[in-house]
Image (tube, rainbow, N blue to C red; front, side, top):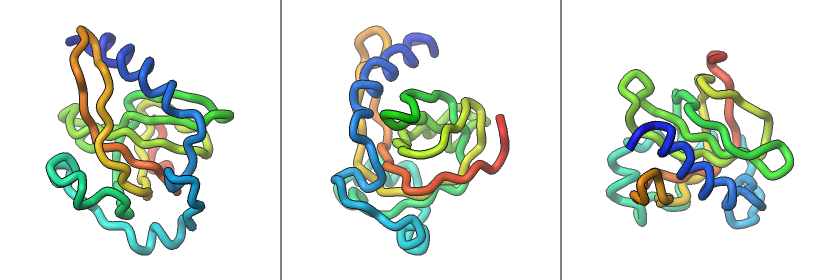
Length: 143
C-alpha cells in the first residue's frame, strides 16, 4: 500500500470518529497538570502488545512528528504522529480538542491511552495503531 492510500483510509475512518472528542475520552474532565504529573513514557511495543494493561493510563510522549492532521477546531483534531520519524515507524493516533498543529510539527504530548485503534487502510487492509486522547500538547519545533 502506498502512503496516499494509507492517508485516504485513515482520513475516512478517523474523521467520522472525531465528533465529541475531548480530553479524557469518557466525558470525564481531566486536569492537564494532574495527568502530566502521573504520566509515564510507555514503550510503543508495550502499548501494542498489552492494550488491556495500559488502557486508561496516563501517558507521556516526549517527542513525535505529526505526519497527518485530520479534523478542525470545531470538532477536534486527530493527529497521526510518528514516534520515530527518522524511520517512519511507531505511529500513534492522538486526539486533541485544542489549538491547531500542523503537519511536520514536532510535539510533546500527555494524555490517556485509549487502547488500539483499527481502521481500514488502502486496498481494504486493516491498520492498527495506539490511540491516545491528549490533555496537553506542546510545540517543540515547527515543521
